[in-house]
Length: 230
Image (cartoon, rainbow, N blue to C red; front, side):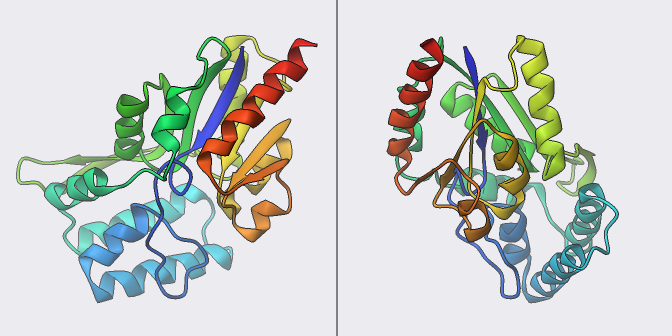
């Protein structure tokens, strides 16, 4: 058995919103700012600039700043749930993952995004392991009340993968990663096999394989299984 590690936003789900002044698109983070209006967009873009300038101590600090933004602009549970429900899978994702031999590959989802989107993918795609950076809790009035944060983006993604490899008794060569963004560069460099799905230029430089159609992932996985069986 091998571990198949899948990014979520941009890889499984379409990332259609890229705010002016940002370097990447996203499914939910920027989608929230877009839904909250022009001032929220301006403030969201400002957080990206602070991250790029190294003004946050960690990814957790960036998320906390963004959560403050969401509260200030009145994010409601109804709006948040609507954005999660409206997210669309990339073409071929559901079909491809349904055809993967689960005795060959244990699937794991990893994201710097929201637990709620990861949970939706888990249910739809029958995945037993998912780690996401942020989970929201709303009060009875539908207002953002609290949150849970995990450091699972950038370097943190790799930490959670090592945890799961250990739990399954797998070696450092028995996993495959699929991602799309610049935040996946470090994990792709450390993966024995990495696949970039329509990857950002920075990721394209370091991945083992690049696919434009998600269905093209299957031949790669089959080849990896065959090679490891030799």
